[in-house]
Length: 114
Image (cartoon, rainbow, N blue to C red; front, side):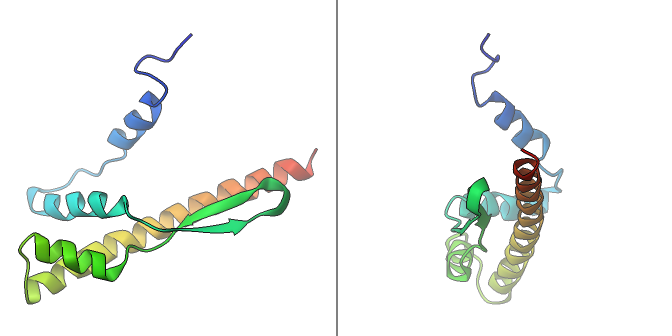
């Protein structure tokens, strides 16, 4: 039986439920992060018998700066924008790299038990 909402409904629901509850002044930063996240590079690392793993790379600093300038930030405001976005991005990379590493480790452990 097909899942209600289509095959990606679970992903969409998870994405909505994991969205942080932000004050209004933080919304432009979060929106910019989500937009820039689409251009994120990935580092693919070969993993032998359990396949490869794709780790997220940090968003390019020039892309963050360009997005801030596009939104009208300049001078100290632009530097603040860059600092906030880099902070969000650093935490995103850290959390997701740890999650992916744990999943990879579990997969490797399961393959050894076979």
